[in-house]
Image (cartoon, rainbow, N blue to C red; front, side, top):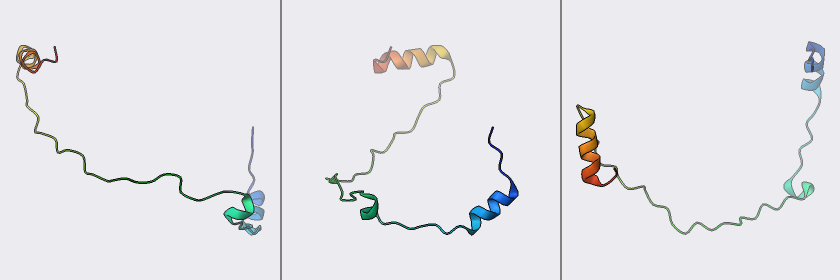
Length: 66
């Protein structure tokens, strides 16, 4: 089990953080992907409310999903 004491938190706040660049860490930040195009998704049509299960099944059969 890991226990953190208030003194440890205070000590950690006082420690300076060393800032390193990507080059110092050996990380290559050049982009590897090219965006060809950006498009909005197609608009959705309004839904339909069915009163009964039979009506729903009939509608699904008409569409060809059942």
